Length: 371
Image 1: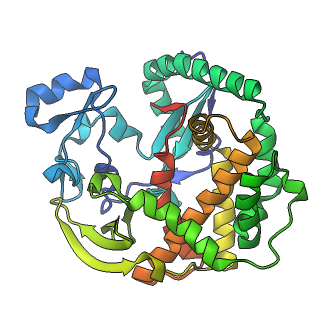
Image 2: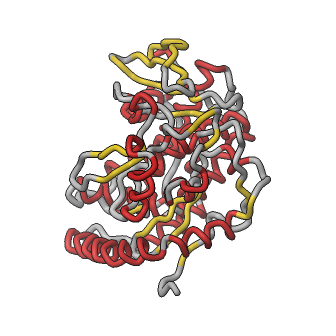
């Protein structure tokens, strides 16, 4: 029996399907846990690779070292009954901070269909299966969070995280309005301690500056020549689209099932104009901002940034600022998809942008850990 509480609020009331044409989860190279290695060593010794790093680990090999999992064939898993724990968990993420929360990866198209299995029931099974890993991670994560809060108090930058979330929830429209987003980004860098209730919108939105801010954020995530490190977007036709930024240009490619990359188009990043979302898109965006506002992993990524920056900014400034730049990154990605694919800037376009973006959001460094 577990001796900790789990927050299931993000998955409660949701249905999640697994479209047979997708295979998006098979692009995420899963770790092979110690207790799983014997099966692969005995039956598929060539299928595991050692991933270097501060804490090296074993993972399943990818086709050509960059494509989908070697066990994916015709978008079906050849070892489904023996797939790893991390394969089983997708699209759920078990985030451990000073508590435990289940988060839903919205880059999975199956999370948007309104059909499939009960996400709450599936999550509870996954949490039970991961009990040992969660319990071990919780001990370490609680210590990390305790030290982080002590550092904040010592530096005089502590705020109540629950109050920050409440303030965002009460002012969601500020984070979907370009005039407010611009002011939030400015004030987070200027004000000693930000207060959303006194914030006024920009009287004249500087679209050029907003474009530059969104472009810089998005380009940073695409600036790699390693296909494993760039954003992937599974489109409605189930193509795996990849975007790489080199010397101010973006190359759009499609990866096939064998791991080969096929060039589609180039674009100069400065030619991509920031699209203004229409009312339907704003409603979808507001719902997503609420999800981010409730995610412990998002809060943990803000904390990681504060720690990286030496506790120079108040927690309120860091939280509101990070949320604003996250939205700008998302809006610019929507604009980029429209530039390449003509998706527009409406309700459906915003959903596609979130599908493109959320995997990267969940991959952001945080002081807690996914298990």
